[in-house]
Image (cartoon, rainbow, N blue to C red; front, side, top):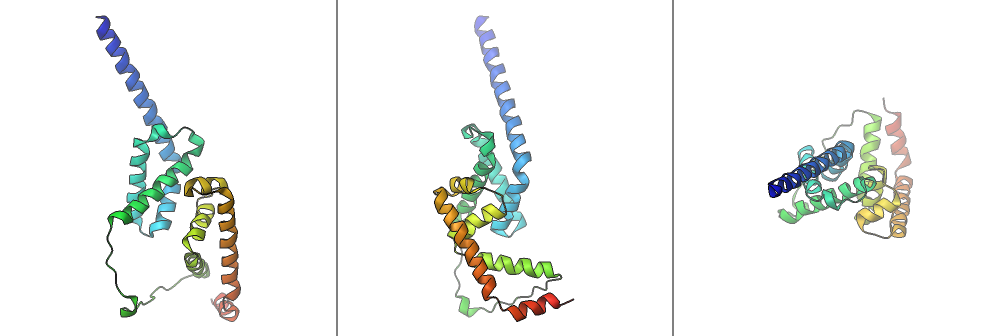
Length: 191
């Protein structure tokens, strides 16, 4: 009888713990799902792959939720999981290599607005940055992380992150300065 009561109490405690974990997990996913998707989409440029990445991130977060000690660090923790999931995607995938000189690439995009043109231009300039400069900049601008949070996510020293952010902005300014001014003026004057 005593053993049965002790077993029931243990089961009740386990159920209570599981329910608390479920509530905590749901609150984290609800709070950060949109940011995770936005970052995943920026990384992949594909809606379906981004959705899959977010799903995998949430699954891994559930499995290791007990390792998250501070809920205030949840966003950085989840973004780190997402980055690692994205890297795993490339570890599993063997891409066929082709010689780019053998193929012509046509640019069939037709921007409809000035803002679209500016955004595409800026995206191209950001993609021109070396990955070590591009990634901290995107984490700061798109995801709103501080230098310290970026340092944690990328496993770097905060000063290194701040230097890379400074250099990334300077390179973007240089790209803007070297942009053909008359051509940009013509684009801006279009109706």
